[in-house]
Structure formats: structure tokens, C-alpha cells
Length: 171
Image 1 (cartoon, rainbow, N blue to C red):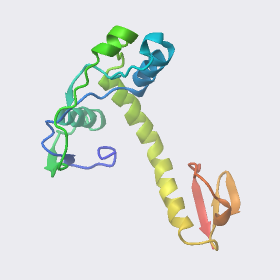
Image 2 (image 1 turned 135 degrees about the vertical axis):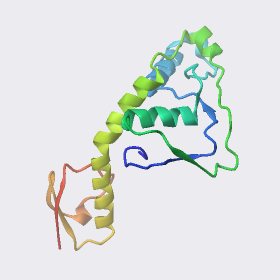
Image 3 (image 1 turned 60 degrees about the vertical axis):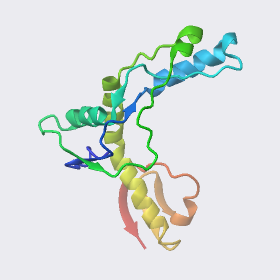
């Protein structure tokens, strides 16, 4: 999100040398399904992850390059968390051996999918923030939105769903 909103230089926590294994949710779902379906998995635990190590700085550079391909990458190291783990490297051999699991979706493809989704949903997320601000104003405010025509704020209870557009606020 920082790159999508134009943060430059990009702020990252710590030096960026922290090692992580960024795994696509579809691969994780597959690993969970394989564990649920296998009799050999009963009472066992597994690390469902990619085998590829990536530093936080490498991830930041990859994201930057996809969003800002014509701009040189620049970043600032902010104060890290006090107890930030420097290396998170899961042992995936057990999942490979017992479940025949191997993560297949690479980080670059995962980022393409996530960046596209975030870009498409930024406007919706901004609308939700606006709606929450309106809700804080009280029940005398009515909101005219597509899908919620002339409903009072007090009738918009429960989880908010992204509106198609915040057209007009009337009192």
C-alpha cells in the first residue's frame, strides 16, 4: 500500500535484512487440504511454506519495481520492532515427505495478484473509511449511496460492505 500511495522514499522496519518465506495463500490452502485428506497427517504438524528465502528489502524492491518501474528504488530504515525475528525459515521437509506438498506459486506472480487486488480495492477501502467517519457523526446524517438509497446511518448496522460510490451526504 505504501508504494501504491506514492511513498518515496519507502519506509521499511529495520535494515531489511530480515529473512522471510512469503507463501501464496493458494499454496497454503492446498497444503492444508492435503493435511486434512491424509491419514498420515493425523496428530502431526506441518510447516506449509515456500522453500524460497526472501529478505524484507528484496520484497520491497520487487514491489517497488512492479509499481514504479521507471523510478529508482529508495528507502529509509525505520526503527525495527524490539523483538523482530531476523530469520524465519520454516523446515518444510515433513510436509514434502508426508503430504507431497510443494509451494508452486512464485513470489513475483503472487505480488502481481496482490498488487492488482490492492489497487482495485483502494477506492473501496477509502469509501469504507468515509462511511465510518459519517457513522461517527450520529443518526441525523443520511447517506445516499448506490445500493443503500436514502437509508439512514442508524440502519447500516453490522459489517460494512464496500459501497459502489459515495455520491452525496445530506443532513
